[in-house]
Length: 299
Image (cartoon, rainbow, N blue to C red; front, side, top):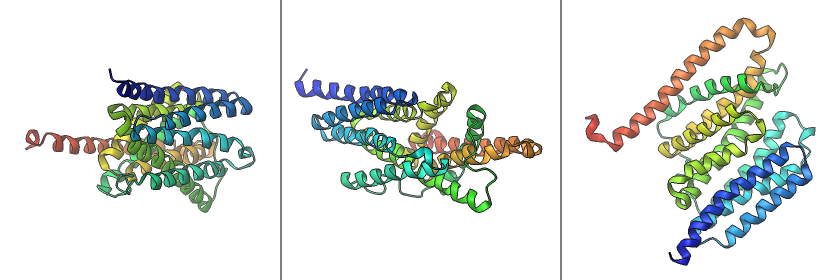
């Protein structure tokens, strides 16, 4: 085997092993040890910088360069007094640098808007994906029972917090993990790129410590990767992610209060309707791809 080919395979293996390094750092952070966790993230960052410098080709170098943003941003956020901020403000403070880093790296790599999914095809089908987000958000609330971001919010407060979740949680994460990561990882890892993206996203959610939740996150990550790739658009994935976050963190904590007990049957019915709409949109997407791949079978 040629040395260049051997090093290329080994380098790809080291890129995969960087996920284990990130998991190690996340597990240390879960223990509340800020000093050791900063040291762990710094170690991962140094390792990734070495992979950038020794990459066998541009594709591997781009992926390693993108991955360096994750430990670097984690180190930065560990220095911020997030505990002094309201919970919804923490999403803005942590999401803003991720979004800016993703935009700057996209410009540096010369990625075009279409490559990043900044298009609007099949709008109605993508709107239907809100149903998946709503229904999954209700299920996740039953699993996690997170506290409300706001206690008895006004409509204006709820709207502002909801838009913050859409912009700084959903849109930013979809831009980074399903758009930029997809554009960079697919040439470097080939068919293994969706699995790499799903594992990476799940590792960064491990702090919730609920196995069922992590399985759902892993599955949703694969679905969102497929949706963005098939639609060539971030719109539907962002709607799904954003509606999930709003339902999980804003709507369900309020509807679960005792004064809203009488409305629970309507919540269940609405969840079922949303699930049907969402699944219908996903099946429509799969059907559309099947008719394009095997047109003769659907004449």
